[in-house]
Image (cartoon, rainbow, N blue to C red; front, side, top):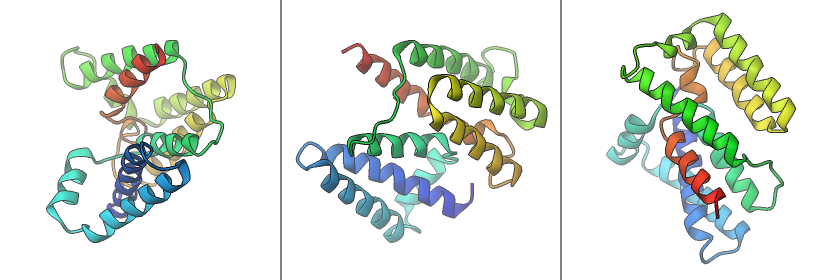
Amino acid sequence: MTRVGSSLALAVLVAWGVQSLAMVALAPLAATLLGAAAGAAAVAALTRSMVVGGALALLAPFGVMLPALALGAMAARLGVDLPGFSAVELAVFLAGYTVFLLCAFGVIQVDLYRLGYAPGPVAGMVLGMCAYAGLTGHWGLAVVAVLGQVFWVMKWGSSNWFDYVLHLLLWPIAAVALVASAF
């Protein structure tokens, strides 16, 4: 993604974090407004700082999924009714993503990541995600898949589609969500 896109994604993630912390003491709307202001201010004021540069270097590319999850979580706290993921869906995602990461890190000698460079497999994965979204009502997955494909086709950052729809932080987020779903 471009520097502007990465900065916007970082602002959303900062807003999500601040909203999450502020929910302890503030009403949802006040916490969300504080989060939005903090995200915008942090990125605007610190654009050329080592802190933001380091965060962008460590976490970028953010892709589409991570900011979409953050916005979804923020909207849910404001009372927007969004479908959640079941424990089975989270467990299947964690298992599949673990295998994908093991392949990407060379532990398993299959290069699944290369599929993200090829138009045919990408189209198939996008259609698969859209079909799953249609069957389960997780329309956000279809939006993420299609936006990821648009950014990939437009070459707005990475030349691999997976970089738009996956992020390393999705693993711990999904793991925490799975554990939380048990309670």
